[in-house]
Structures are given as structure tokens and as C-alpha cells.
Length: 289
Image (tube, rainbow, N blue to C red; front, side, top):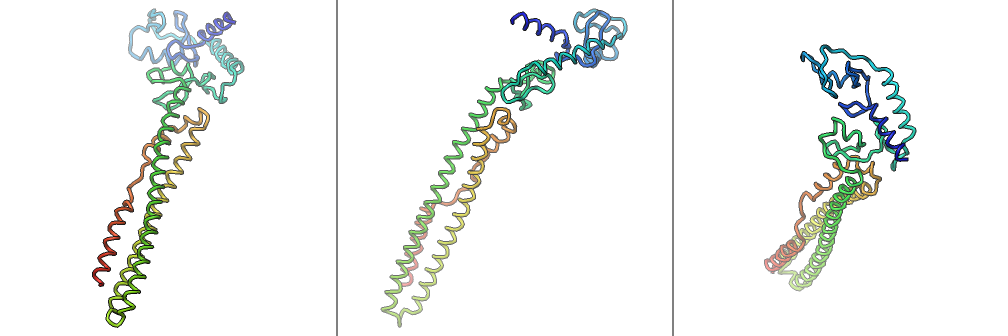
């Protein structure tokens, strides 16, 4: 088995261009007998050099003379088809479309899975690459970290909404008590305090409306924030559970949205309003009496 593997590796070397490290494309042969892709050798030689050294053995040639190697081109096509049939289906069912190799690496610059042959090509040689599972784990940890922060913020907003609901109910009960007190006291002095009764009831009605308005405004705002965070959490939870190839598609965008997902502003704390409303009620009563 080892000998067969070495033979397959040697055979692949024979159909690989030493310049681009990929399968030959339109292979040509130099005078010294070495083969290159036509585009690769043309790029190496340029246009104005007096001598044309072989990129492999450095033997100079007096003129640009390239012989098409059609037999080698046919062998390259046979090798590609053979590798396509012989390579077992990797986990996830994805292989490199160009080289028919399993996608085992992840290019961080291009944010895309690549194979080991792509890694050695000019397009990716200068890029940093990680094993695909390691890259997936790294991004999965980033997503989990953002999920934890988003859950904490949602819980904080839910607690704030609950505080607002409780405080508004307490204030409404307080205004009802004050209303009953006003009616009881004014009833005893109706002839003298009729006008005062009207003013006090009007002010208490305004306080009812203000309490209801503030509760509605803050409840709506908090519900929207909670809904937004819940939707983002659901998205990131789903992304985190996806297989590696799908998880890495658009993962940077998903993580970025998770990092930017903060509440645009904070509602005032209901306890501060409690103090203001209490003072307002006390002043209303004292002025009326």
C-alpha cells in the first residue's frame, strides 16, 4: 500500500507544473526537455530578455522555442478523471472543483475552504490558512461568546420591562387611592371646594394619561429590542448548529452582526420616575389643599 501511494505521488508530480504547482494547462516543452504551462513559462520569460533560462534547470536558450506536448496534456486529463473517480467522498460531500481534493484548509483572507494543492498555488501561498475544523471551532467559539452576551442583554431588557410594568401598576394604584381621598375630602367641603375638586381631578387624570403613555412607550420600545435580539440569537444559534461548510459561509458577517447587536439606547429606570411621580402627586395635593 505504501509503495502504491508513493507511485501515485510520483505520477502526480509528473503532471504538475513546477511554476504554479497545479496540473499542466496547455503544456509545452523547452529545448532542455522540461515541461511547463504555456502561460507560466511565458510569464517567467517576459518579453525582452536576450536569453531564456529554463525555470527548472536554468539552462539558457538562444530563442523562444516551445514545443506543444499534447501527449502530456492528454495524460493530465486522464489523471484528473482518475482522481475524480478514485477520491472518496469527504465528510460533507465537498471537494475542490479545480483539483478534486478534499477541502481540508480554510483561507482566512478569502474566507473560503481550500484544498492542499490550492494552499501551495500562487493565489493562496501568501495567505494564512488553518485546518478547516480548527477554523470552524474558532468561529464557533466567537458565535457562542456573542450568544452569551446577547442572552444576558435580553435578560436585562426583560427585567427592565418587568420593573416598568410593576412600577406603573403601583403608581396607578396610588393615583386611585389619591382620587378616592380627594373625592372623600372634597365631598365634605363641596360648596367651598368645588373648584378645587375639579382642578385636582383634572391633574390626576393627566397623571393617569402620563403613566399610561410612558408605560406604553417603554413597553413598545423594550418589546422591539427583545424581538430584535431574539431574532439575532435564533439566527446565530442556527448558524452554530450548521455543518462546517455551511457554517463558514458568511460566518464573518454573522459574527459581525452579533458584535454590533447592542441596544441603541436605554430607557429611563422606572425607579427614577417613581421618585418624580411621587413628588408630583404630593405637590398636587398640597397645592389643592
